[in-house]
Image (cartoon, rainbow, N blue to C red):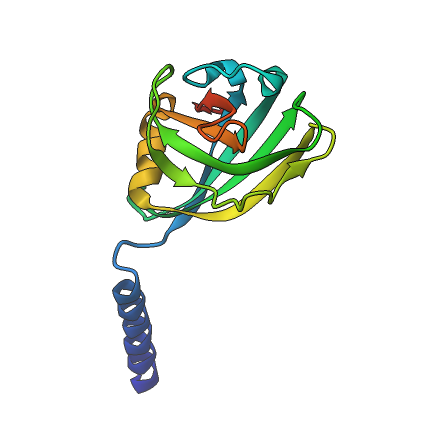
Length: 172
């Protein structure tokens, strides 16, 4: 009988300890994916010249951790970009998610943290991936709530304000 009581007490203590460590209950993970069609004509103002014939796509995946109530508690982003039709030797100087509706420019919202020349495309075509980017809970929630108020763009030395841009859309 004493062993039963002791076992039940230890079991209860274990449950109490678990609840103290994670009072909101167990967490879960999910993904939200966005795409953007990158075009020089979408930049404000539109790009002219040698780099105006290029295009690309960006896929941004938010890797979310949520508490038992479904609230985002942490987020990381993975970004994959493919470009084509740019001049041979095109080199990126940066890439970002910006706040701003179509036709308007906005400040950097999430930076990919590229180094100038980190990605060069000898034939004007290629792709790159950046994984595990830090995204705040507020940034993740804003992107999910209204993706069309954000755009992704890539930058070059010839077009430091951005060479190709596309509004975000959630992949269904």
